[in-house]
Image 1 (cartoon, one colour):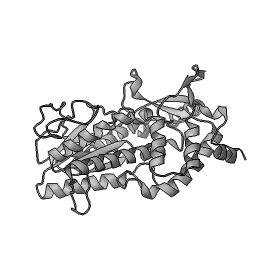
Image 2 (cartoon, rainbow, N blue to C red):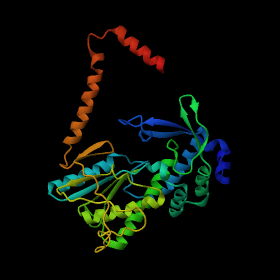
Image 3 (cartoon, rainbow, N blue to C red):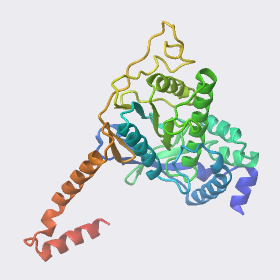
Image 4 (cartoon, rainbow, N blue to C red):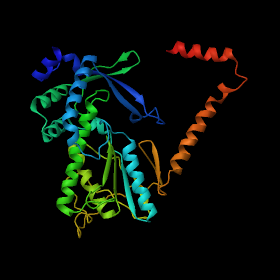
Length: 346
């Protein structure tokens, strides 16, 4: 009864608006820096059931219309698929000594930056029925949060933008917005420069892969890729900005650099996008010999050896930590003591 009332009335109880934010330290990050923590929202249990129901119905109707190169938070899709495609492209161009450029992009706090207005616009563009759109936007009409640290809670703060990491619906809203963004980039590029990159087939252009906000662009032509990058940087209009220092450029059989645009505002006027223009480029995209993408290491040699070596090193390091517990000198009493200490912590 409550859930139907919320959906039909495009409203939600006041207690659903408040979330408690718990900061989770990211792996191998400096705990003294605020950006090293991932803010996870602990939401009302009934709210999460309601949001999950909306997400299930929304994805059933919308999933087939989303961008096919977006693999995040979708049924029957995983990180394995974009990794497989990237390895196939690397292998193909390594075998034939072909040139290829890959740009691994790092969005600055993508989940926290997307505006609520752009979520609503994206839903309307995909022609989501008005009752669904209103029900979803109602959840972001007046969201608030408190920061939780142990048993302590901060004062109440308004959440003016971004989605809640920890809400079943929010990640799906992000990929809807990002699908709109990549569609717009492709439309603008083809209207200005016509042909898109096609590493496999001219009839099936392919220039991007995404897993949620983990984005990679690729093309054998550096001019084409630079133009796509410059158009994509205009994503600042919806609140998304690139971390220029954390983006990476993987070069295969080439040493040619690719440059960011000089400003995120307005249409790019550089000499690559407008031949003959005196407007300079921005800084070059940092070049890397090895890139970690979705947990897998990719290198200029297009071989799996780099990834296997990295994984073996991690495995050996873990075994080294556990070795004292497998030693015959470790007594049963010590093992029981460790078990009791662990149980008491829980």
